[in-house]
Image (cartoon, rainbow, N blue to C red; front, side, top):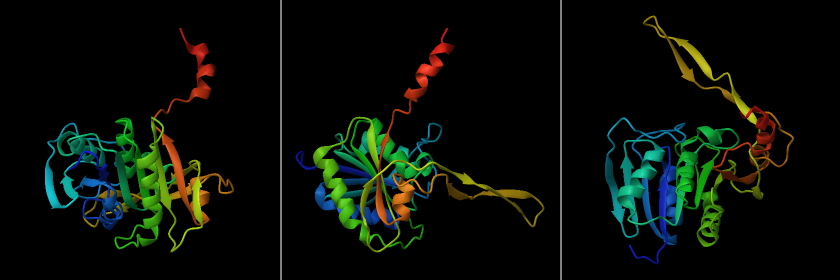
Length: 255
């Protein structure tokens, strides 16, 4: 690859076969040289997990002018680490996660393998951005996202991001968007997460399911409000999770 051509690293948590992954590659491939490395299978909910206890493998799935598609048997973060170590040859100009099938707004940020991709890139001091669509269907329509994905990718390539900050971008499920809003994470939580079932052979098992509850539905500066009202939600997300406002209170605990 030419040195003056931007190097774009893409991964996801839905697997290299996912439509959102393929669509994202197509949306940005003319912006630089694309190396895409994604899990061999679904790894949703993997967050920032990596695999220190199993051997990892890489497989070249597809290669043509300007695009390489690889798979890894590990987590989304494993994919980024492996790509940086074995595939890229130099530091990428941007790391992109997605496009995820399903939103990663509010507390989903902490569980998301798509955001794991982006956070790993950010921790390596690479401008990083995650894209997610509020549609879990395998055949979701990603065409309405194209212009915004390209605009935000171009802005990050051209202008960069502050050190330690990545972008979590979520799209509502609709054919056109009312606009783009920069917003904070909504406060909320998942409820009734564990469903108990009984197997005909006599033992119990459990599914992780549940439903999300927005604790501040009227707050108009949140990602959930933006999505619920037809806006693309762009949430700057920082790696430093220190609760600075609590430090002074805890000073009295020092010994």
